[in-house]
Picture (cartoon, rainbow, N blue to C red):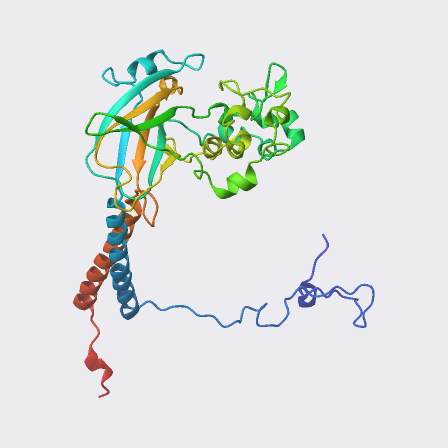
Length: 370
């Protein structure tokens, strides 16, 4: 066996016989440069946690978070909200027959009416939402089942949609516009609201259908192919989604700025929800007079054109009337979270203060020199 010898210079990259004059066999040392950065001698700061710094931090956080949480919670509770479940799962529900007999293959829409009473008037603008439960818009394959290029008005994507849209990519040999499972499952119930006055007369509540979608969606992400002039020609050679009753260019023929891919009901639906129970904005009831409430207290009737079956997936449908505040819709969670965190911090501050005074064994006399 050949013996090997240890050489400190070899460890640094120097080998016997190597020339110090920069010969061809010179190997540079792998030792880091003698700098403060490479030798880890940079100045560093490390906080020293003491009772004098930790306890005030807990009390300050508690005193700040608790009032903020109370303000958020009170603001949320001041938002008025009224909800009606019109699924029709119960025999006594007005929409029971519609829910029982209606399916995607039904050609005749089913009508039902749900009377209700508002005990308190709704001031300012009122927002009407539709809500679905047990509908998983967050499913991975469902979320991917769309063609954003087609929705942006690209002509090539219109005629040849993305394969992500399968099995809703083509129908009867023609490309589907809009393609995909999201568009195919578009919510298509029609909701109309009527106020019953003291004489028993039904007065229709005007519902605004524009301004319900995000501005960026309406003007950036969604565009009609070839502009908005003649959508019948623009969508020629395409087929409607399987579950739709009319093609996309007939969604709102009376308003070219709300027809086709830029229809706001369609845009709102295409923004998928993160949870299986969700609500989406349907209409806006605008306040017309500063002296009268938007929706006065009294009797109302919700007229429903029942087009969207939910029994197949044990889902539920509801209509929500809600006002908003500077923080948005009714959501007490944020206020409760602030109050909880603030209370915990304040409680921990009190506990640690008691422990500090009880078990502090430092003798102040020890600091006095003898």
